[in-house]
Image (cartoon, rainbow, N blue to C red; front, side):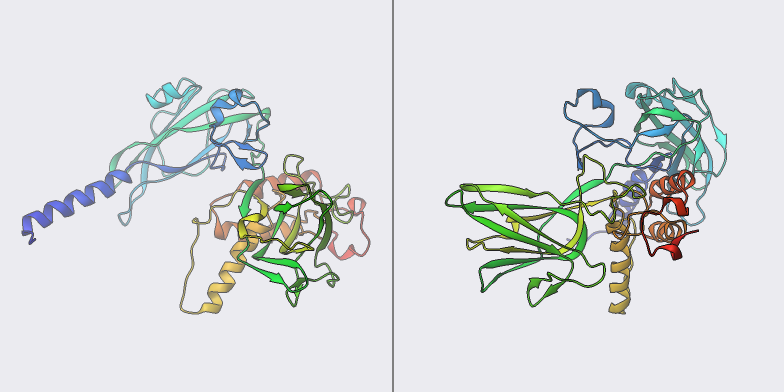
Length: 398
């Protein structure tokens, strides 16, 4: 079908209008530089219950509680035309979603403020109350788009204890991962490779014809000839577990043993709702002869919430692409404690390491709460000699 010039113009105009209308309101709202304040989690897994319905939740839950009685608000200014900037904004805060949706700020209304600032705009009302739900949205005026639409409503819940300044942060979360490859060893065993190392836990679905069978599970970061290295050098991790099997098919959750080297008084401890983790890429199930599929072997990786789509890099040099992927993944994988630590050696925050990790994190995700939490932790627990429970670490002291 041949379109006339007028038809093409009309279709183009409608297409432009749809794109513009969809982008004609502020988005990417952050409360105290935390994005997903409207989410809840149950023991590391994201829940379908929004934060303002936490009273309806029976099981233990976690959320990114806002700890400041005077939080800040941030957003992305709409508009894709060159030279677009914000002329003014208006923020409203309500204690119920109905008022917020109606554009009523019964807690605070900033009125129209002539400013280009859209990052960390301080709340100007009376001190917020602890353990309470709040809802906010923002409306802007830009030099190219004029009066924009209201943003979507953003919800947040305050923590049990508030101060004039304290950084809110996320709970650690869990992601289910399956092996990228599996093979059966000649001497009765299964070897699974998850492709990358991660701090995590393991779950296995295994079958037994009686209640006398058992298997040995090997977890590690290094492999030799299709088997997990039982005696790795240096700080490369390896764990061994014996699992007794019940009759029938059951799912077994391997309880990761604590390591005295990184769970001492100076270390940052993993939360109880997460459970202990270890870094591993490979899993070997020794002494199991029945068929195993990739869905029978599950790694539950633990990390700080991470937006895979927040950053992107690609070039014609494949080596640079691999370096980028490695660096980006490393930021996510080493965030398992919610605070920048030295890794799995001691799990202790150090000022210089935290700065390096922070700058790397800024390059791959639009999140700042982990850096702020690390700063506050180090202000309270600086890296001093009397905190060290380990020998041979004098070069790390400040």
